[in-house]
Structure formats: C-alpha cells, structure tokens
Amino acid sequence: MLLTGTFERNVDEKYRLALPKPLRDSFGGEPNASLLYLAPGTDGSLALYPESSFEALAQKLSNASPNAVGVRSYSRLFFARVQRLEIDKSGRIRIPKELAELAAITKEVVLVGVRDHIELWDKQHWDQYLQQNEPIYDEFAEREFDGSLAASEPERPNEANKPLPR
Image (cartoon, rainbow, N blue to C red; front, top):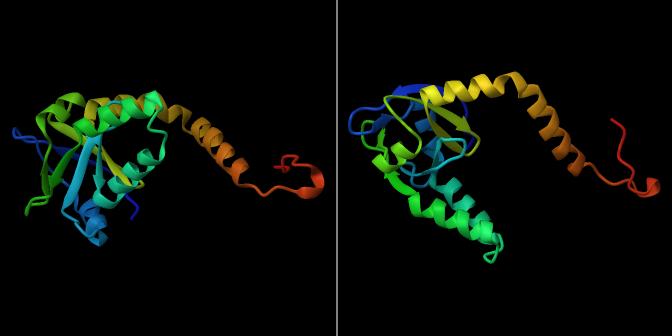
C-alpha cells in the first residue's frame, strides 16, 4: 500500500472527518480496512496509520534498545496517546479531542499521504510548513538521496572501498 496525495477537508463540531475516497480505497487490501490508529505525528501533525503500517512501526520500536532513554521516552509519549479508530459507514473518523488539540486542529484540515500513513494537519499550519520548506525542496532531495544512494552502492574490492564516481 502506498498512500499519496493532498486533500483538504473540514472537521465538524464533533471532530468528525470524512476520509477521501482515494485514501479509503488504498486501505482496501488491509485485513481490517476500517481500523486505523491515530497518533501524535511530527512537526505539529497527527499520523493516521492502517493496522499493518502501525504494527510495522511498533515492531521497529520493539527492535530498538529498550534501555535507551530516547526509545523509552518516545515509546511512552507515543503509545500513551495513540487512539484506535474505526471508519464509520459514511467514511468518517472521529478525531479524539485531545489529539485534535495537540495538533491545533480546527475546522479546516489537510490530509497528506506519506508512504505508509496519512498526516493530518491544521490547514493554516500546513500552509506555513509549505511556505517554509518548499523553497528548499531541492536541498532536501539532494541531501537525503545522496546519503541513501551512497549507502546502497556496492563496494569495489580492487579499489579499497573508494567512493564510486558520480
């Protein structure tokens, strides 16, 4: 499953949010397609995970050192606030008030597909994030892809591990 796209929606007074059909359709291959996990995200967002993605994240955290202070702290803060949600017959979820407040969610929200999860942003906060980060998009791409590509290049035994020419 690959979640992509940007969708603007409104949240009603009960914090109900209609999920866009393309995103709901992406969950179709999930064993429990109507079950989602809403968690604190990064940069002021919330993260909405289908069950398989959430289980993969939980497994990744369980593989980290349980004695590391950062792992323990993050796990406590993260899992203590995660809420299990169900998509209703109208294709909506209800955002728990405490999570809506955590992300400063008001009426207008933006849903952003990010590979294995959806980020929920207050629209004003998302617009600010875009304004700050879009101008340096190329720098992010260059820095992040250069690092990952270099790590995946094969070693050359005859050249004593010199970097490959680019």
